Length: 349
View 1 (cartoon, rainbow, N blue to C red):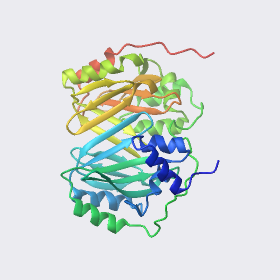
View 2: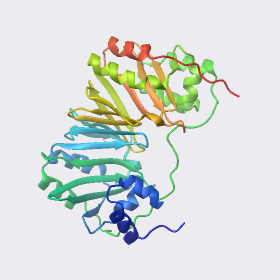
View 3: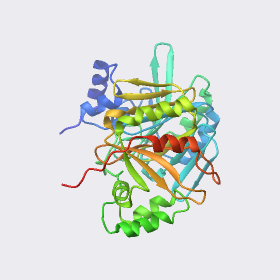
């Protein structure tokens, strides 16, 4: 199918001013990056993807809103980009509010976007992967330093300001490497000897298992399936107890984390929403096909996560009780996770 020209994309925007850009791009059969590029030279500036330089430059901009999303969850944190460091193929931002794990090799396209809405000008940085899917966005706030933002954009401005962008088909990555090389006994042995939750990724890779394969194999003392209908009650429980949690949402190129309690929880159609002062979360409950509680050993005792997956087996969102190195798991979080109703795993046909 022939893709629409930039002028056609702009006409579609004018004809559908209220539609979300992500949805309109899908309707046009293009990626969101291609949609954004159509405005280069008219409020949009293509920028070089120099990730660490960008993140460090954002510190001077002050308070902003960081946004990371996938198809089923949108995670927004209001704060400052601070304590930027890099190593082992990842870049970390460890601010008081904005906590990110970034994989810069995935970031392929970047834009600075200005949109006028009456007397208001909304400014953002938007980054996309090679397929044109959004990996991370930064939106300015009323308290942001606009001059620092403009200086950062000027320093990153790309030579190419054309209104089209080349994208490649999505790899469909996200559920892990397929394979059934490991036995349940091997998996349980390796699982039982974990001393840090971060060892889990290496365990899956070495045993050639996806997360869900591992959870189905390991036994219900380590992982058990939950009733997906109980997810709203988990939010309400955590809010009513003021239990500090950790909430992880990832795109292909970024994982964004909330630390702390949640307060204002509401349901609107298929969405469950958290609208707190510095944390906003929007989760599509109708996209949740499986929910799991997962117990991992650490040197500080086991920790429990609640994990939600979509129909394709991709993780949508993950929750833990808030804790720091050297601390045991919070008893109130463990009680919330372990009190969620269990369901039996479906048997193979």
